[in-house]
Image 1 (cartoon, rainbow, N blue to C red):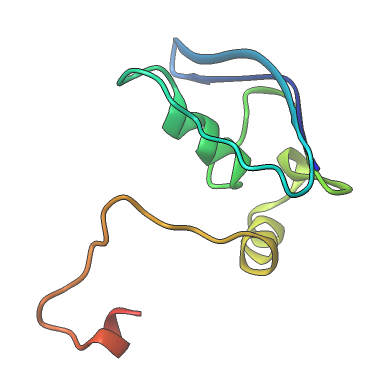
Image 2: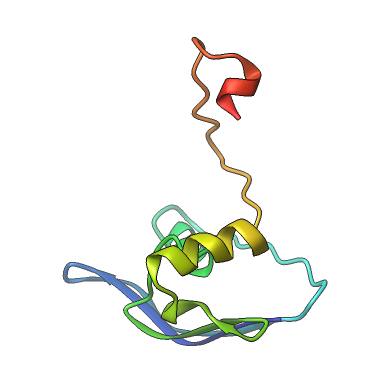
Length: 100
């Protein structure tokens, strides 16, 4: 289960996410859609511990991910999350194995 409670995120003086409240059940498939600049990437970044919300709570399972330190967040990502990036950022000069 993933639960967002009053999650907000600001960059400098710009509010990107405001008081997001939602719950995703285990096994549920969710699509996040919206126009460019509406906060989709920011939402995914705070969910994935890449970024920290300005306020609010995000609970994944029993873990309050907004409270994780940098090292704990890295371990959490390694052990609990998978990423498929929109851009691959592969280097032509490297082999497949080296790019991995």
